[in-house]
Amino acid sequence: MKWTSIAVSVLFPVLFTVLVGCQKAEPPSQIVKTMEDAGSGDVAKVSDVEIVRWLDEHKAVLLAIKQ
Image 1 (spheres, rainbow, N blue to C red):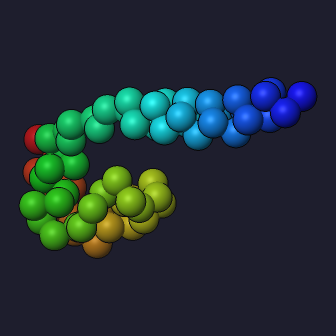
Image 2: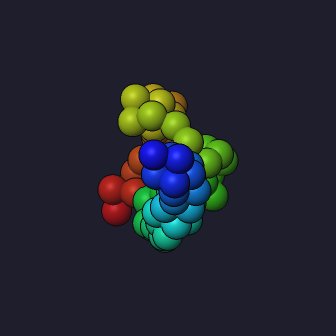
């Protein structure tokens, strides 16, 4: 019983670190790059609603993205 709890307490953090550390960052799309270049900030950290609101306030960027 003691070895089982030691094994679990050691293996769980190791497996968690490996699984979390293996995630690849997705390269930004042209739309994301255009928005960030226009001053929107980090698009990955905001919600869809906030993105839509920002695009509504910046019609020139929205038109550039549509083209």
